[in-house]
Amino acid sequence: QVQLVESGGKLVQAGGSLRLSCAASGRLLSAYSMGWFRQAPGKGREFVAAISWTGGSTDYAGSVRGRFTISRDNAKNLYLQMNALKPEDTAIYFCAANGFLQQPLSNFPSDYAYWGQGTQVTVSS
Image (cartoon, rainbow, N blue to C red; front, top):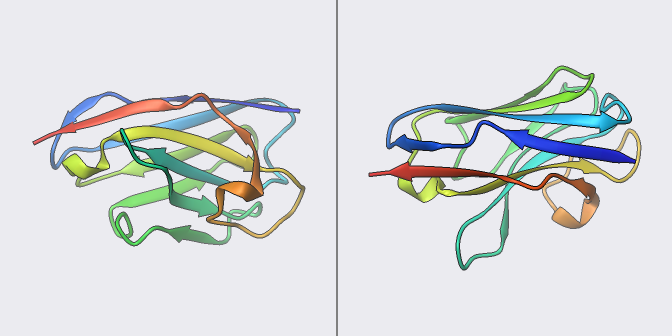
């Protein structure tokens, strides 16, 4: 079993930066591909970024590519560096781990079995 806890979300002005962290307890994350998703009020859960279990491959939603960077320390932590934030980035951000070991990265929520409780990011204009 994997438990995930996100942190780092807060209120920030447009153009600012934030770094989100996701800490795991239970099993190590080193053999799981992982991702970040977000959900804005009144909207569905949206893919943000994903990273392979080796850390060698990443993928990003078009809306964040070039501004956000996903990384991992291949032990128990996942990160999302967010730069040049925009008001439309306002959402609850969730980290997630794939349900199976050593799977390719994915941008589909259904491929992820373990989810954190989320951290709120609010970007003011």
